[in-house]
Image 1 (spheres, helix red, strand yellow):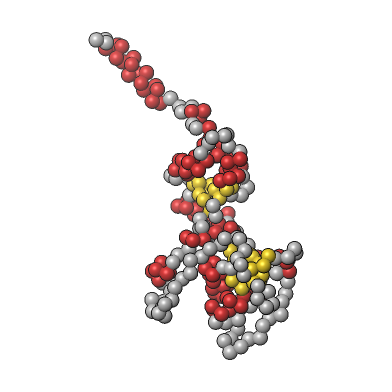
Image 2 (cartoon, helix red, strand yellow):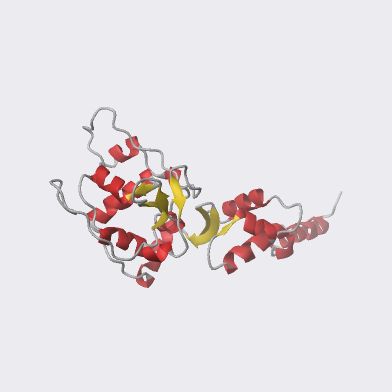
Length: 246
C-alpha cells in the first residue's frame, strides 16, 4: 500500500497534468491549416478551393464542420454563405461593430419590391417585373440595385427585343446572411411575419427560387461588353393606365 507521502506526490502530479497548457501541435493539423487559410482570405472560400491547399486524404467537409463547431460559441463564428466559408463576428456581438459601419442609403419601397421579385422569380426581365408589380418600373430602380451589387444581368431572353434577364448575386446572399437562395422564406413564413395579407387570392403561391447561374433554354448569353451597356441610359416605356413607379 502506498504511503501518505507517495499518495500526495501522485495527487500533485495529477493536478500538474490537468493544469498544463494544451500543446497547440496536438490539435489536428487540418484544422490549423483551415484556420490559417480562412483568416488570411480577403473573401469567402469554397470547399474545392480549400481542398487544393490541404494535405492529401483530408476530409475537408468533415474538417470544416468540426471547425464550425469549435467556433460556435466564440466571438467569431465560421459561417457558410453562398456555399463558401468565412469567419464573421458572432451575431450577438454585432452591436460592437455599429460605430465602424458605414451608413447606407435606404432603399425605396419600389426597389425593395423589385429586389424581392428578382430574388423569387429569377431569371426575370424588366417587363416581367412590371407585370408582377402592376406598374412601370423605373430604370433608375434597377440601376440602384445593380450598383449595390445585389443583382446582375444574366443573359437575354429569346423573345423579340431580346430583353435582359436579371438574377441575384453572392453579394445579395452575403448582405442578408443567407446561406442559399432556397432559404428565402416561403408562403407560410411570409404570412407569419405580416409581409403578406392573410386574405390572399385562391391559388396564390410563392415560387421556389433558384439562382443557378446556368442559362436556361429561353436565355442567350450576354455579348462581350454588355455588362457596361446594361447600365447605359435606355428609353423609358410609355406609362399606361397602370401608372408609373411607386
